[in-house]
Image 1: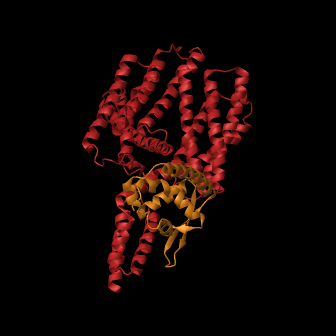
Image 2: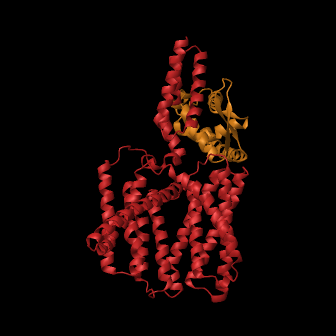
Length: 450
Length: 120
């Protein structure tokens, strides 16, 4: 009898080992399933089955492991969001062979480079090119995801039409050279384009909050990969430049005219593909980064707050300072979103959630100071395109942060599940897209293209 | 009698929430209760219960806590929350409408012989 029980334990062990290899089922979930399995076995044994039979029945009743783990994956997409490609439609595990994907990625990367190079040649340097840079690169990244997700014709239309509208607006509006509406339109068009990349990324299922969260994760990982590629590229270019300089060859013009126009847009597409290709290297760094930078950023904001508040004379506050603070607030928001996306939504409230609330409250403080400064400036000097755009963004940020803080408090007090916090973040995202579109489309005529 | 897969899927949430209304339970006990309540008619794939429970937890309808079983194993218990009670009340109303409509249709329609045989 002893021996056969050993055999049963060994079988359960093997089962655990098998199921644990599945990334969608975490160790605690395996514990839960094992408890279930053992309960089922005990009941079968009580009704007279031997160990072997009881184990087989229990396993059978647990169901097809692939189907069960697919359900787990659907529920916990955060655990293996990189493999989503295989999951949402789930029908064909095989997909395209890897070399074909690589070929498509390289073709798109080169395509983005060619587009920028042609843009440089046709448009020349300067403002017009700056307005078009996003248009020349990001559609290639969106194109990759549209290809990868095999999106429907309707989604393709939903992607192409806004891009055409943007292209027409950015190039046909009679912008005054050196005017601020042109600059604003260029900046905000990138936001709109990035959200369109998101539509392609989620395969057109942009109504789903969970898919949007996947896109937030993608954005964070993309930023990390792109930075890594840029750092590596900079080192490589720096070394080459230094070496060639010693020999006396002028490399700078080659770099400016050929290497950078191809390398940077190409890196955008390649970074997107790297995230998609589930390179595991960064996977464990992402939550660590948010854990490091959330307290640091909160500390930075708390240090800035008294400086800003006591700086006095907010009317004459340097406008560069205001722009900078806006950039910081946007960055804080990105950090907040990313750390929320990296968090296990079932974990109970902890210290880190408290820290996150501190970050949000500090950001709210900075936001309040900025709003006062902007309103006083507007009262003093009237509505300029820049001030209006900044005011609009600040009001959007204020609404976002106030409600985020409110929900975070409710979550910390155990009144609401974390899912509510997540849902607010994802459902608010399109608001920024709409605002960016308004700045691109409406601001220039509103301020007579100045 | 085998109950259609879609029907099982649709009734799973109100069934689990309703069972938890009687008190906290762990996964295996919930499944046993489903078996008892349906006279063995509703056979769930055991493994599918857990993703469902986790979804209900994410939605805030149930909360979970780890305890210990009689045999000394770690065991996860589930309890219904206030939001879960509200969701259940909502589902109850929906099901009342559906079953009321079905009852009326079936009262007015003569059963097909095959169906009668199936019931017998």
